[in-house]
Length: 436
Length: 92
Image (cartoon, rainbow over all chains, first blue to last red; front, side, top):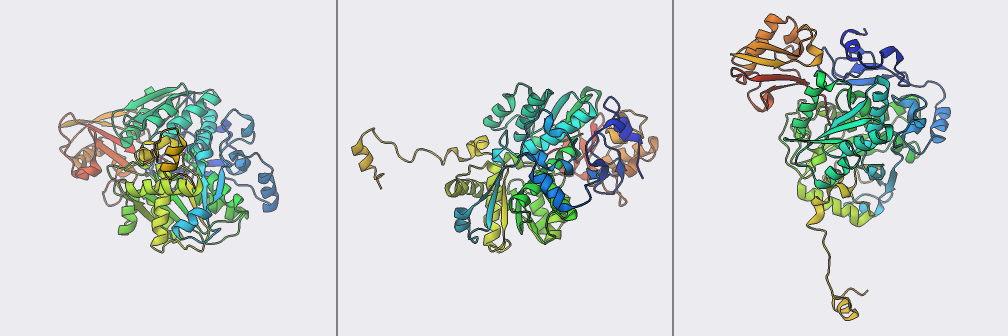
């Protein structure tokens, strides 16, 4: 059954649902109870409060033709436009064209952590326009905002998203106003503020910011605002599917055996799984088993704690970790992460801040990739899972680095100093033992 | 013991479109029961079949998430602000 009541109310003052062109997107469905709604700027089911997800009429026909069409597409996420909630001419609209980032075969790192040569890959999303995977999801949200007639683009953010929204809004001609916790790393504040939009610091942590934004969206004060991770969240989340598409295409249209993915709200992990399932359904990849592992920081590990305890319910925590981009104490998609980890035979694990820093430095030292703290969490957990025997070192493993270490310099500043200070003389150089 | 309850958009069909209503009760459970008296059907949206808060509903009494307090038994002093908010926002 298709409900019209509140969804119709929600699209008043925006484009009417009938005129919305979001390509293959056919509607929204509740992940919890299955209730169906028309496309619109709504994000929670009116029956059970469950999260709404985009439903599709995906392409049918010859997988080979679709594969060729994708391969001939632009070197960004729009090569996958037929599988995303975007109009067919999306690539012609002003946006940052994120994606198609490097998949690095990490043999040096593999040797260090005990994985077989040729089996470990790092999907390095620091190469996106604002240096994190958030550019992918914001690009989707922008298209939904256009479709629904919003004029202001907004978000609650732990930093990366604020920058991604500011940049994308600037390029696409939207006003932006983003909300961040007051104690963010200075680098992220600068990277969010430089794009010229409003940047509002909220006295509280991320969960407080998120609560405020959820209240604003339900108030006349928030009229005309597209919050990428609130009322546009169903569309925004779909951007993470492109990570799954790219990884498989870059591996030669093969699903990796094991993926390690960081958990903030858990949305990214669930959408990567959704992307893999779609590729199987479309016949673009062979249907084969894969394991999904979730990574958290010990100081904010509600999903990991629930997984290890065998619980289906995620008990919220007050975050306390250097991995601020993952510091969501009440993760909206936590229960679904548990389902996916268990369904695929994966796991959810956490590492402490010291292990996060060690992992950042290990990746930098072995592969020349400077990861932000979230990447350190993911690699730290990978290392732990290999050691514990949960990750098979002889199978293909893809580790996600979701952002650039330049965003979280504070995490490694104390341990990344000059290794020697000498006078500018050859004698001093010789005495310091630096010559080979 | 009157409190102000902020109603999210998806529950406003039960409150005649109002975003804020008053309710009586010394605890959150009593407040929800009083809401049900005046806005029939609203309790079943917030509580599951076992009478517990639904998984994807966050409720705050003033600035405190009741999950960190006493859940449905959290005290709701006179004049308190109670906010019902969908939990599926935010993050990635």
